[in-house]
Image (cartoon, rainbow, N blue to C red; front, side):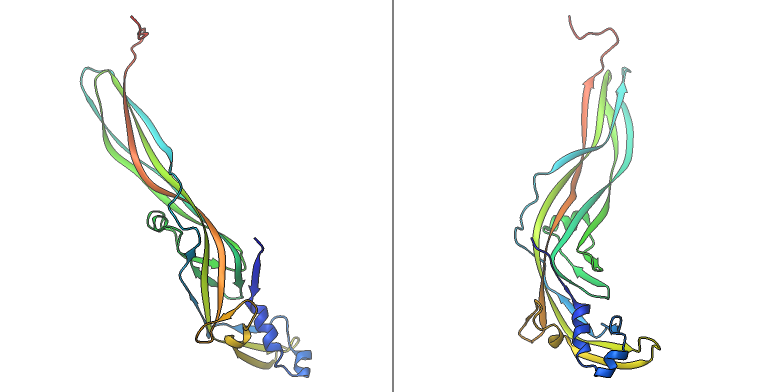
Length: 251
């Protein structure tokens, strides 16, 4: 899929430069003017997935395993307490997006609520001219149980987790409103030359933007995400007879 990136900062500079006088253009620092984004607002719509559905079949992993042996004539009880950590990840790839000089946060909802609930992913994805982002969340799994072992037996206890995977293509409509101010200074003396301001509805016209019913420019962000996340844990206990020395198990 081809990559489409709109540089809002460049659009603003190109627009503002048109309003400078000829002599101002010669003296002003046209490459690095001061751009004030504080009067511009960005609203993010709901994240919509084209192939939203259930996760793939869960895969099990053994995080911890231990064996208790009881070669006494009475039942033995052991206390088992342990903790293990894993990481759930969600890789976000943008195919159509925008960048600009200030910090930009996008609220992306995962492709299935189970990721949001169980993995606890942070929804805010900070983009600073980066076209992909990996979100990681550390998960803590644990067991605190009593293990009973019968006489002449051994018991194996395992801490097992289930992990799922889910991939989804997403779209998110982004709406812009307000104004942007551009201040030019002399490229040598840094003396003030001029401040140009413009409404985003005029600055962003065309360039991949579409006006809404209120004439505000909107931009459809597109991408996909690949998620791997923990779903559940359980303790698996297996008891088998002890094999005594010299006992071949045959008559």
